[in-house]
Image (cartoon, rainbow, N blue to C red):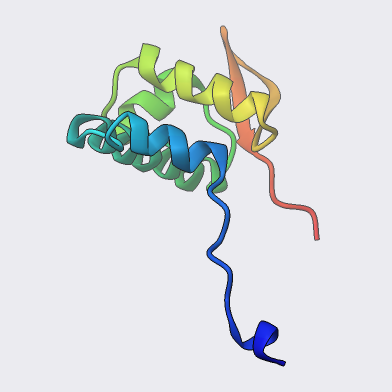
Length: 100
């Protein structure tokens, strides 16, 4: 019974060891990831209202079209955005709802 009461320290995962060796995440890197998440959330909210093109999204969330396109391609790669047809000369993108 004494063995059960004693807790063994959790073995460190390789990612934890790597973070310790490199001094953790810099403030600059933390800000970068926060901004990426903010942009992704803004795009998701805009796309939940309906399909939009890159220029429409760029105007709506006040970001350069190149940055919007970059984020959309990442979201498309991981399955949260799909192509929803054409709108004039541009491809329209739509938010893919999580399947229940």
